[in-house]
Length: 119
Image (cartoon, rainbow, N blue to C red; front, side, top):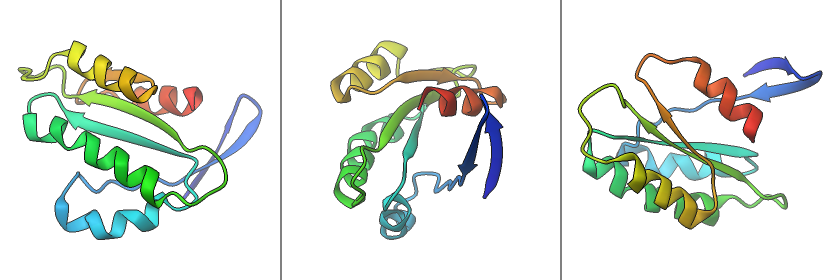
């Protein structure tokens, strides 16, 4: 866990990266409980990764048992590599769920901070 001061507010950040692997699916429900926000990232070079976004979002809604609304963000990652999923598909999916959408280069680190500020 890291604490950061952003715009004069102390923010506690815990980041779990399951890499979307099915073997972690059973554990992720514990991560979603009482979460304030989730960054859902798919690989623009991998159709399967994009197809699983629906499942992840449904799991988040199912297992987040907090009273507050959880904030979601969708990120298309690896846009600097040959794409199989165009950005319009990602935008449309994000729009369907009413969540913000971002594109990210493989090596860009600033994006996570930008996303946290949007949440």
